[in-house]
Length: 103
Image (cartoon, rainbow, N blue to C red):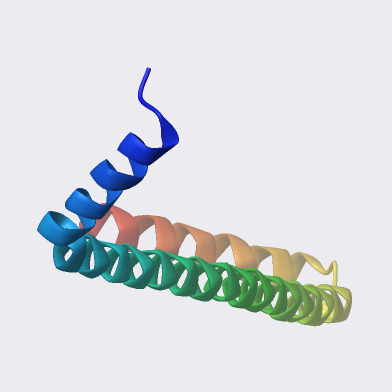
């Protein structure tokens, strides 16, 4: 086994030969780690923002669907059950069917 003196000599030689390169690599690794950390934080924030935006969009869509459903229900309630109205509705459905076949 190498003694402490031999290890310190080896360390000194290593520092003389590779000192600048090791410092450059250490600085570069620190820079890369900082970039990764910054990107991870930004990604986490972007995810949180997207989740919030999707939640808001879901609420808006649900509210709009509810409003449209209420409006349709009102219009249905206004329709008469008279035979004439049913006949009109039947004719309109036939026309829609014909248009779909032609398209």
